[in-house]
Image 1 (cartoon, helix red, strand yellow):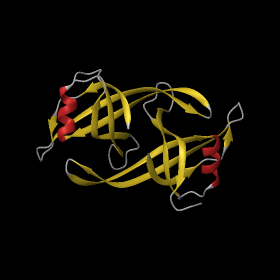
Image 2 (cartoon, chains in turn purple, brown; image 1 turned 180 degrees about the vertical axis):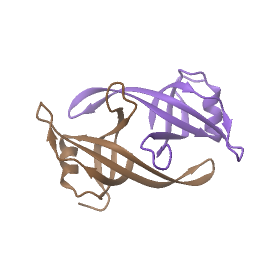
Image 3 (tube, rainbow over the protein chains, first blue to last red; image 1 turned 45 degrees about the vertical axis):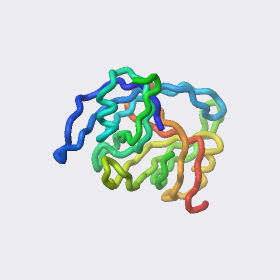
Length: 95
Length: 95
């Protein structure tokens, strides 16, 4: 699960099989405990959503705070870049 | 939580404050449901562990199957590369 702000949101598009899909970027900031100390964490993650989740994300305005559950996968077969595939999305502030 | 095989393991080193730290890479493969269909997922993730988790990881042989709980952070302040910071490690096959 990763929470963060939607900072980039592409237009909803469709796969050749007609499945809605949307690409986005999430900016995450939090405080974590590591080696016994508080640590500010900041990262940006590329994301991808299909079907219901794609329509949900495409409907909100950029900047919204969301909580995304999903899985990490390589961007392409031999890529070392990671993409978060959203299987469930929660809106923290309400749409 | 991410499970996978430890495919690269650096030697245990120490921060200037004397905290043990180790860098590793995890290779993950699984089957996920996406857009109603099964999908084979494969990715490689860079990881980092401190203290107890660093000692644990440094003690095992590469190739071990592990389950890592932690958080994602950027590799450095402005980096888009993600690193999984391990806060808990489980050995799937036993050490």
